Image 1: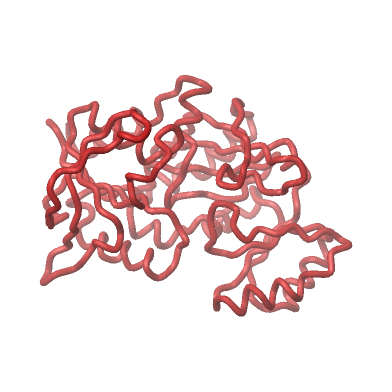
Image 2: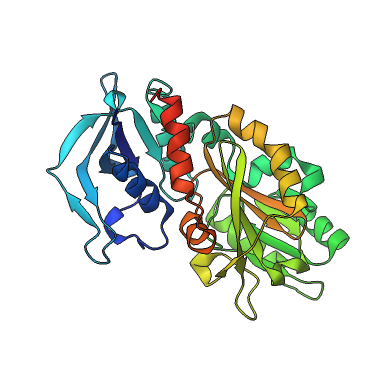
Length: 314
């Protein structure tokens, strides 16, 4: 039985079709006979008791420059859909959070992936705090004295926005650095949010591993290697993806966090592992499945839809 699937995401016309995970998930859905409807988060609305979206039926193809065809624009009641994908990129701001509240109103009758209540309560850099023995020394604070004390203890640290993404605003402050006060002033002048600081892990030079989990089970990993002279390994800022396998430590981490992810409806998750340490659990808009498919032949999108179809009873 085909499913009615809605995609809440950033503009689909501008995605990299050979790298974007949402595009691959949607293409797999279409191949399985499901219909697709696309809208951007700003077109989501609550209107007189219904959760509505204005967007387009779409058809996809893997053709660069010609990968999407749009049907006529229409307004739909998302409560009439079988599945809604929550897939816009962060930043995880109040606009993002509001969309999770609205989608809460139709879930679970309409299956929202990932569960919006727990996306809201499990932002990437906060869920890891539940597993302190798996993570490097970490502090979340806005107070400069607290951050200074953390740096004094650990010497070499990473400082970054708590709700950022894609490697934006990530700074390494080594023992000789004198910029902490200035960076604190810069960040706190732009927002009222805390910062996150972690002990710097030299193993990042060997790569930042992205492990993909589907319904709490690991399906594979890719390694993201930073450019020479760069600390950040995110592919958004030039990190190079490489083929890599799962270590026993990776599997141990997945065994620990998997039941929580499964219980809270986080079907598609990407965790970041540097050396032996878990640094992030990405539940908002994880990436990496196309690279994994090229390296290992692992069709993560197929596994995702098998889980969703089982939950929808087909």
